[in-house]
Image 1 (tube, one colour):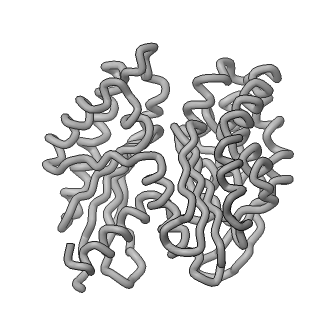
Image 2 (cartoon, rainbow, N blue to C red):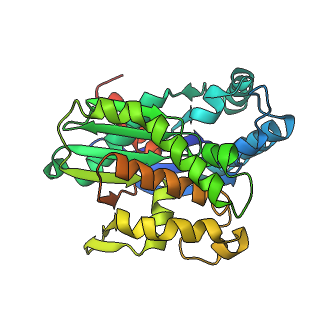
Length: 314
């Protein structure tokens, strides 16, 4: 199979992200470049569940910027996918139709379990078969994805509405948030996670746990990651005890103070407390003491799935 230049547009809850890679089946995708526009879509959800005109304008501007970047790099095929925020918005269908017209290709709308499956595929390829049964945790802006399995297709693939942006908008109304708000969020996370935890009891315990997404990477860097493997593909680990030590400190800090911390970018400072609470509570509920931070996630999973399809002649 010849090398394909793929452009992948990820319409997420926090960013509109265009990534261009050179890829062929059986080889590691080689990044060409990327362009990302910060949207923080949860700020623009109206009481009726629709995205405001201002939010729609920001999304479309991000799409136009990403498409311009992809065209400047050249590509053989453009893939576009939307996740929880657009999927769930009342006017999401109309927005997605407009995006599809601008791109010239339809936008694939992923269900929550689809997100989990694609991210699990990326994590499985990254860590390899020697990792055994894998448990995946992925915190996005709108949802938390959880998957478990021994193959490339997980036995269990779940999506829970516990994204960093969603939980922040629902519970952390002040910044810094008061102790009562943080406590209310913890209780909500525990209640919301309970059905997922019960379902995961039906599969064997994992041999290895990986965490993906910018939220987990930011928290791991902040918490003092430990190197697991040194080399061109350094692998990092974060313990729950490290994270638990930081959550109350993060909650007490101002957004400006959090920006000064390692790993916390300006766009993440407003929702990192919500993400940290979700991460800590998910690890606790699932009995996870340590995670490995996996740099591959949803976009890489989509690329790998498309390469598999091309190799199969589909």
